[in-house]
Image (cartoon, rainbow, N blue to C red; front, side, top):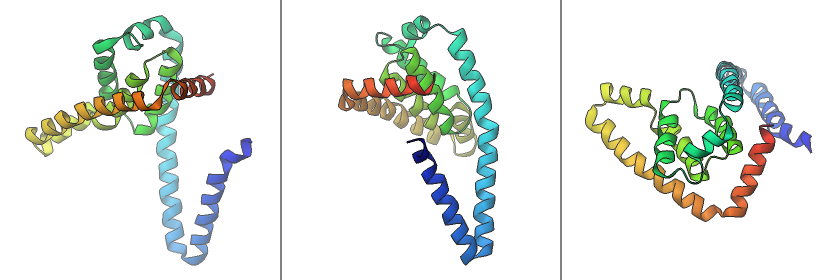
Length: 177
């Protein structure tokens, strides 16, 4: 069963090898892009996992549940937005954090809001847009994104169903142990 997780990387290695055989320069470019992406991941993932370990050990589950759990209400929504917006790094960094949040008992819609905020409402991105595209554009995009994230989180939580959400939480818990 564990061999299944290596099928895609091995398939991609075969594709790149075939591309090398057909056009050496395109193969070199593909390998160069793959290498730079791999190095970027190596620079981002270790600090995230260190922070995750600290989050897991230093912040008690009860405190997380109180602020982001099922009964957190508007406070949990706002905190999820702020945590996602203040985050740095590519979106793939949000998923291990989301798994730890699930292990700690964060409400499913708050996890989705956190991921949505990480992907679209980052503070550095907003500041860049303010400077380069103007305040009108940046504020309009934010005004559209925030309700969109909330709406998607609520709809996804409703249509996913309790059984599926429980299965997702169980898988996240088993991955982070």
